[in-house]
Image (cartoon, rainbow, N blue to C red; front, side, top):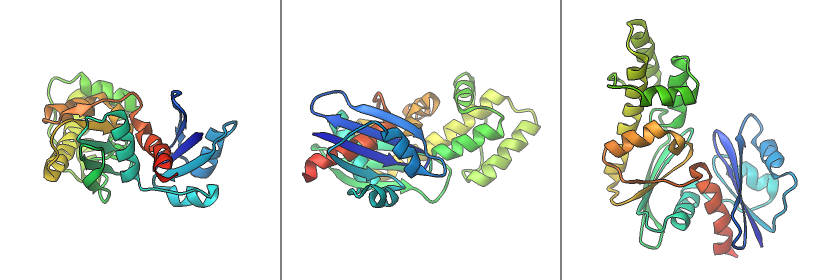
Length: 248
């Protein structure tokens, strides 16, 4: 049986195709203005027996593909428990929100918290800051990793932080220190959110934000025990495919 998990996220569309014990087929593309068409392009030439969809566009995807949907929280929990049964929680940094989930010994979600009302602490915030500094995202991360010390940011609001960055550039703040300061402020916000939820033990770092080496380093220095996985941006899509087994 070929099971298809489709994650129609806020910034990208991800696909995970599972068949028996074979390695999953994983695909990714930016979401753009028409995520359904992006999904159709990713699925061209593929076949499946059952399908489920998650992500910001799950209701749109469920209507178009006539398939069941599930929340990102459940999808991420299922994917994380499958990949790393030892994980006691998940930190998921996406484009528009950040989630922290507590998992029990059987990989079931016990409680969660989300930052989905403010851009600060999300992948989008880092993208905006990189643009304000005239850097591509990969350059932004590399620049931050090379800094000796961090420029302190006083504001955690995305709008005011951007103005603060522009002012810092104007007064000649080192680019490396500023880039590191931005990453550190985001990491500290995420660490505080995790601590407030009371998460203990190893946490799987997922979402596109998990590909940011500087963010991961700063979160670890903030005291989080993070587990890595090969394709962190596909964990929700994988969990979505695995949910079909549960419901069949």
